[in-house]
Image 1 (cartoon, rainbow, N blue to C red):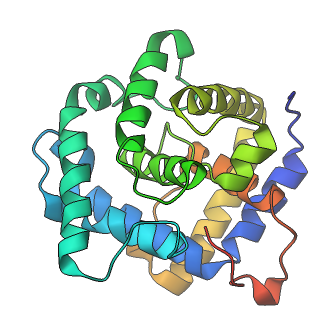
Image 2 (image 1 turned 90 degrees about the horizontal axis):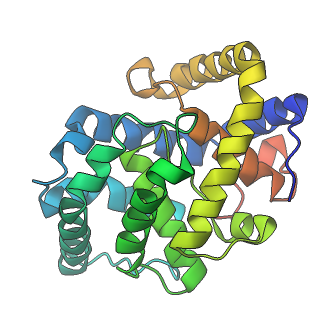
Length: 242
């Protein structure tokens, strides 16, 4: 599938996404908590309790029947333990990608590392279907490196016709790199629009938690909107799941 970026539509889509205060606030809040923890520097010595913000986002963004989530403390601790162990074993891989953003991503240099990370977390099977598991995995790795990893979900996977596995995600990320390359020609307009939206969010959520969103996140928001039906401004928090 050849991708042609319509910058006007891209800007419109990320503004539409920002109308959904529930999803937007959750992302800002969880990102803020993980940044304060300096979560990426902790990989290799993480403890299960450090996984709480990530598990909170999965609980709030995914349907209850998709993610193997439980209100029971024991179940949440077990999920945190399994994720913690997997991430600590990926310390070397995350270090290799620490300063790599989407524009710097090179499939020949970084492809095997990306697949190793994706497949290790994907094998935890935190959800009830292959597509949902792949969705969960993309959200986890994005939170750990939001400048590189683009999230996807079942509709986005279907839209781009990729397989919900490590190889499919690598193909998806390679295509999103092409999107990012096209968007660089409109950088000033994107910066202006995102800062406008950030300031608007800060008035509602508070300046402290509203940091700048990465290009990888904005591309996800564009994908999210264009693979859904248009949502009314007054019903932006309809009963759909992120």
